[in-house]
Amino acid sequence: MNVWRQQVDAANQPLPGAAWERLGFTCLPDLVPGADNVLTAAMILKQFHDTNFAHPTVSVQPVNGRTLVNLPTYFELKWPEAGFQPDEVDTTTLIGRQVRIKPALKQAVYVFGDGQSFGPTTSLGGPHPTGDVTHTYRSTANAQVRVDVTYSGQFSVDGGPWIDVPGEATVAGDPFPLEVLEAHAQLVTR
Image 1 (cartoon, one colour):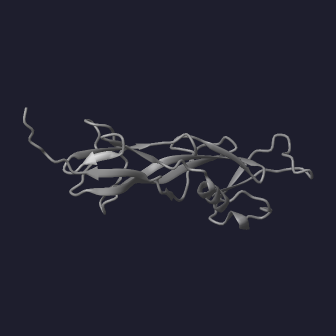
Image 2 (spheres, helix red, strand yellow; image 1 turned 180 degrees about the vertical axis):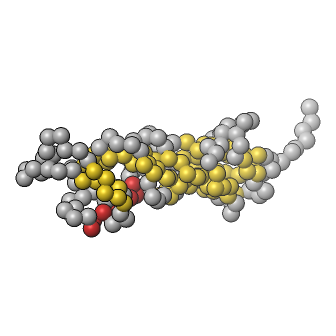
Image 3 (tube, helix red, strand yellow; image 1 turned 90 degrees about the vertical axis):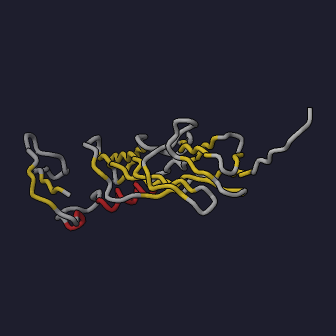
């Protein structure tokens, strides 16, 4: 963190015309003289981890929670209304300072429920025929599929510039039940 200094009066108000002076860097802002009640990187990182991140859901095609053995199944990551998804801003106040947290998608892992997964990737997948996240089941199953995401992010203090958060948070997606069926051909007379 950068350490800056500005002259203040007895009421802790900046003196007229007093300019900010840059003193240098520190990794331990709690140790800066007079730094009681100082917003620290640890506080911001804790707030990042306390963010109500959106729990991703998965959309599957074919639809209606059913697919067939040996048929490519398409998966797409969807963001629910609840929680903060990438590029939405969570605003809070920490020790009198406005702190904004903006999550970003670092990676996603698609879990297919049959012991197989795809990722990490930044792909959101997509519907048939253009989606780029597909999986072909080789046997019948009642699979619980999901997308787990890892968020990185940025923070801003009091409307200042966006700064990368020194950490990440992984959120397990909500499971979606998928029935994998086997189709059988049958000859009929007319």
